[in-house]
Image (cartoon, rainbow, N blue to C red; front, side):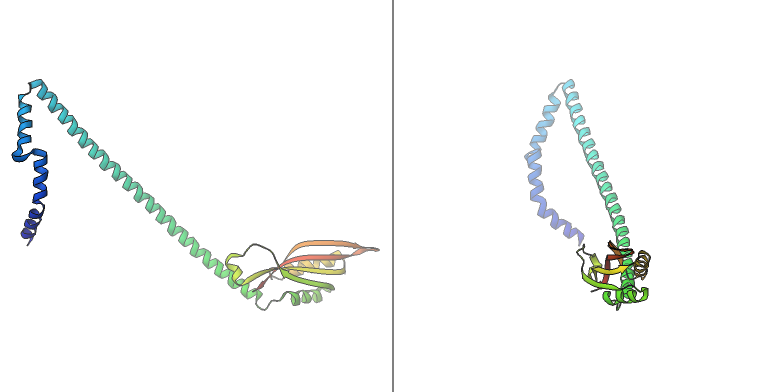
Length: 215
């Protein structure tokens, strides 16, 4: 079977090999014979010089081939090393990404659990009642902030403006402290205090909070 295949391949490429042989050596090796005759007709010193030139050319060719081979091998090694490093970094980043996703999922669960059923105005009314602070007005509007990435799908930021007509500083601090300790992710954004004429211990206050609620 293999002999037949080899014969078929040889027959197919025989014309090409014959053409190349005739091109290089001439028909009936006439170019090769001419070159050998010319070489042997040269003086011994010229023959030695020709042999030395051929040997140098052959040596240069061999060295060039080895240099090209080893340079390509080194390039391949460098490419493989770089690929291995990139692959390791990919797996590291993939693991970090999976860990970040797990942390985000945990945070999402905690926020949803904490803010489930939470409403801003009723919350401030409850704190007002608990601390004995009379709130004149409560205004809530969407906050102009940067997008919260993945959290924006279920969470929105709100600006809350609370106006208190008359309050002492100790009572104001207690009111703000109670709100921030409620674990409802509410923080003071700004505070404006105005002295009430003739009432040194009481002040009119505007408190601006940053709050979150489920979308």
